[in-house]
Length: 226
Length: 241
Image 1: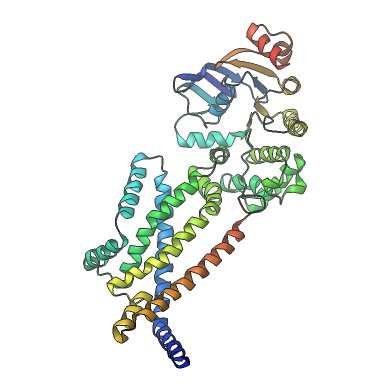
Image 2 (image 1 turned 90 degrees about the vertical axis):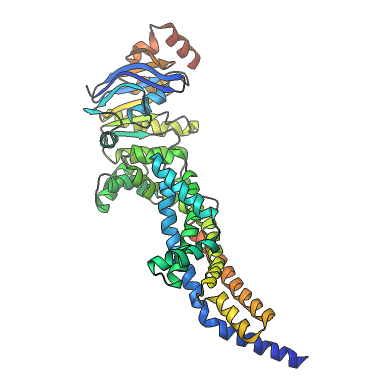
């Protein structure tokens, strides 16, 4: 019995060591693609509420199309489809696919965050001579930011998990490394348990950080946290 | 004439909230608009600041025509400050930052100049000890005084007050009216929508009584409040008193 436990521990440690070099790639894909998603999402979210009908319509189409196609298909399309035309490497294609996909969700979150701010705030800013852009930048978005932190953080954690899909195009991140270990040593239970555990540790850590972030952005007497 | 409104019509669907109103206001004049709720007085005020689009007619303030032209609207709003019933302070900024923001981004003043002016204005409304507070930490009366300081900070030539004491507890109304009286005494051009008849009597050069989107009667406080010519004005005042 003791012998079995010792062997198991050695096995798990072996798997962990094998997976570790791939871990930074998972982190890098997640952070880069989410940074892209934040920028794109902010732009599309603001365009979505543009008073120019045509512009708003374009943003709606972008959001609908991106949200309506599975991420896996988008990864294939960007890597094999666009990738062969534009000569994209695995990392770039993966980051683009995940980033664009999440930008659509973030755009909707940002839009609802902006809409959640009372009309009186717009009117007060406009009446002070601010342009619509200045109103958004200095008055509306800083207030929306607090509202959107929890759902945006949700998306960040989800994108960390979805970065595993990039393994399908041969990008050697955590999930891919797990598959490689399995195909070399044929231990499935322990390998996937370990891969899952590592994801879980990362997502739980992120949730904790988000809690801190919410506290940091809370202002005395304003918003839900006192 | 500083403010000229000609044949202004502003509709919400089928209802004309402002129905063919013409009005002239001189520089330095304090005009109080009274009337029952739904009479169009707030809408008229909001048209003066281009916060409400109107359907026909003309508004000219300080030689700037209020129209769809963005540049005009922007220039107009620099000259026309507004204070709202619901304060609309920026809750994510401190009191001083509330008063500084438009100075910096609209008037392009340096942080130091904006802060100096901000402090001076907050001093004048009696809130110098609250510069670092957030709006949520203030009472209603304090919020409204910050809102007045904020509007004054960009040096508008006209101040619009839209029922600024209606959301306040009775004991806080006085402190806000006091600030407004001081402004009137300094010769600020002011257009005030208010239900406070005694206040109107004190500060107004002219009172305008509106009903159903139309101006029913206008004149000095002594005429409107004490000897109204129109029966509807008498009925309204009879109900208010």
